Image (cartoon, rainbow, N blue to C red; front, side, top):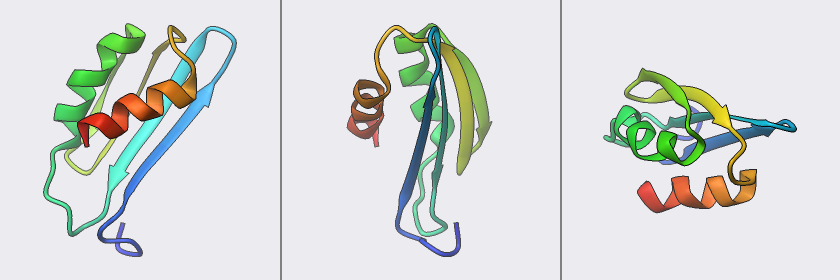
Length: 76
């Protein structure tokens, strides 16, 4: 994300029984987002992965999207 080099992006989509997400960070941040995914996937019994700066995944809607976002923020 060249437009926001110091920012994180958290996108969450909730359906009736599923929760999907996209996580990314700006170019100035040195953090492997795959490590974050390993921590949050058990929360939704999900699967996912990607590149160090962009990951996506999904799973069961075991918690609502807002609570999931807060959990993601705790790991950032």
